[in-house]
Amino acid sequence: MLDADLAALYGVTTKRLNEQVTRNRDRFPEDFMFVLTAEEAAGLKSQFATSKKGRGGRRTRPRAFTEHGAVMIANVLRSRIAIEASIQVVRAFVQLRELALTHADLGRRLDDLERKYDSQFKVVFQAIRGLMTPPALPRRRIGFQRPPSGDE
Image (cartoon, rainbow, N blue to C red; front, side, top):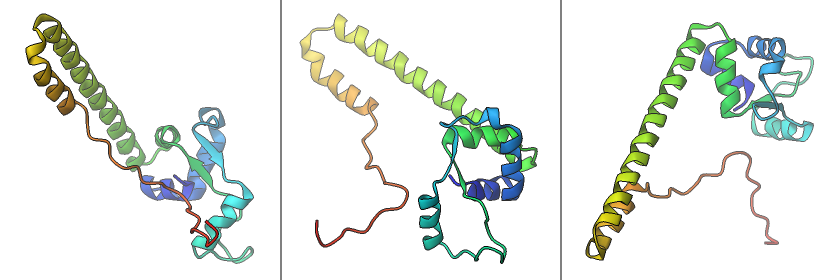
């Protein structure tokens, strides 16, 4: 997610967000945040209307944040929205952990039952395992997609 998008989400200016990243640089390793290359930034300018240098607009390349960086920036910002977002992220992680533990416990119990009963219930156990496994959803590619050329 780009710095400007996170700033809007957390209710601060992009300048304020980037100031906090600079002040807390040790909290943002490369796997949390990186600066777009000149080529990547130029690609964004062609997709979005931006002003020319000297007429307002952006003078530095955007920073991109991973999900970990987005959580970390919520922790260093002092806005009410950022604090609320940080709390919601923590609650979501706790719920995910509880859900994973529930599925792990259910899987162990199912393994015990499989060992206890003979093969006549094999189909039943396979059906239950199928229900425990979430369906694979097609992954949407994000980011810039080059249009197919006529050569391919």
